[in-house]
Length: 429
Image (cartoon, rainbow, N blue to C red; front, side, top):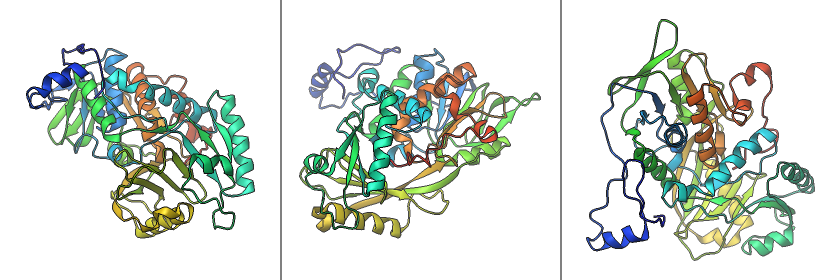
């Protein structure tokens, strides 16, 4: 828990602090206040956010804290953080090639750097650095070009030689005869990881502190529109809830919601897998990614090695994936990091990633007045969490996107002004 000065939030909720920790120790920690309430829904709200993941909770928090809109409900069909927020590999970076992507991810990274203090909740943000490997001369030359473009946007990044990488990651195999030889790479030192569950809990607690209602086990089953076509509210498993503004932040299920509202979104939902090993002593203190083999590795605070891969090749809403992806991931991991060959896999899981044709998100108004969508983040959703919530709250509050969000409107698929992160290989985690 973050170390504060014992001040109270907007609704009088006690702040976490070293003094609160000592005080509650006297009662064996049995008297901590619930992190957030579990209210029944009101008949209506000023705004409804559909989706209780990191992006949805961040949107609700910024609606309340920045825009003063506090009569807000977050509707989650399961439990808080039970979707992609709790099912990712927690990598955070902003070193994207295109200006539009760099702007929103750098906006998010700056918010990450102060998040624990702002939310009064330790999200365990660790700026341990993110290294991206090059496995060929061509890839290395392309990386040098990308580094210069990234620097022009004022984002920290630098090229590394194979020797530099070996010094930073002693367990890596730099033998030039292996299948994926390490030719060099680049690093963003401000990148790193955070605790995914803590991000959801921190935003949920902070939003609740502003009076936001967080309603779990409440599935949206439809939208109600008026004679003018504008949104009037949502039909749910707990009955109708009215609102003049509805923001949908449901990741892979966004296309299901849009069809309920009468229009289609250009996204596909696919499983994205990850796994962790049994815990071992600290052996890697950074994040290392490889685009060529779509495998990345870091080590958790518990000692587990965290491995991630690319998406499966089929569309699915299942939170699991196929064995061939795991086999490909582990084959590359054993070659690049030989010490992992005898480790046991502790558990595997999958998230549902929603990907647009250009691998960039949708933060947009829709054909339905008063209905807004935030989706299509693909494999980059977790790192964008605070920035996504911040700009989406601005869109919901004001009805128009700000300069950061504007390039990611639905209109770009009609005009052709795509933000092609597929072509820039920015889709890697």
